[in-house]
Image (cartoon, rainbow, N blue to C red; front, side):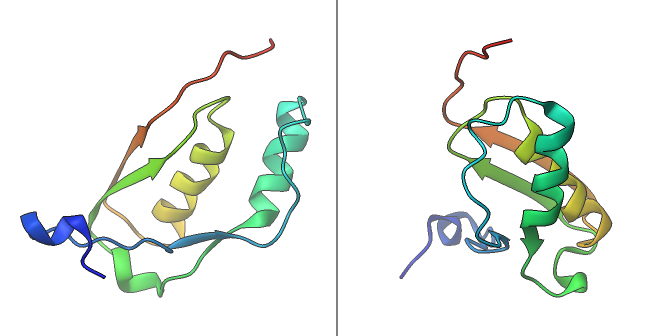
Length: 97
C-alpha cells in the first residue's frame, strides 16, 4: 500500500503507537484517573532510535480533553527521543466540563 507521505518524501508510520486493549475511556471524567489509565494503556511500538532527532506530526481523529494526545506526545519525546512533536486533529467535541 502506498502511503500519502511518499509523494512528498515524508515517512509515515501508521502503527507507531498502540493501545494495549484498555476499554474506551469516554465515560471517565476524572482527568487524573483518565491520565493514569492512558499512561498504562498507550505503548510505543517502534525502536527507541526510530524517532531520534525527528520532527513528528501526530494525527488523531478526535480531540476531546487532549489527554490521549498529551500521553502520546510524552511517549514520543521520552521513549522515542523525538526532537519535536506537532499534533493535528480532525474533530473537536464539546467538553462536559
